[in-house]
View 1: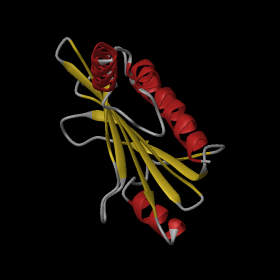
View 2: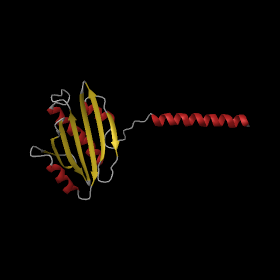
View 3: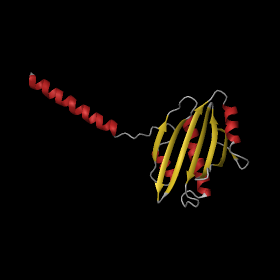
View 4: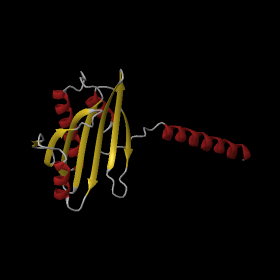
Length: 169
């Protein structure tokens, strides 16, 4: 009887080790709106992601980064749930400036504009799905990025916005 109990204990210990390794092997990114494979395609290379859940006064964010030949490309998705979504959307759109363009068929009231901070060049899409406000920014540190050239930035930011808004519905 003792040998059976010992064998059972060994099996349980082995199973616990296997389950422990499989849990450790899971990706740290748990972004609910976009996976790393899709983000990698949008950024033009293998991207790694990080998900940060919403905290008091801060939206939930997914940040995907891809670095190649000294160029860093980044895709950031921020989603917040607000009581007055139209008012919050108008506030965010005000920051887009006069060169913004409406984006039909993506969420509600979506808008596309430049996303540059002096160190990076990029595109931003801001939109709404019910009471959820989303902001998608794609940036590159290269002034003349062959992967994220201006026409590519526009197309890729809209692709990301379609994915995110579809997952928010």
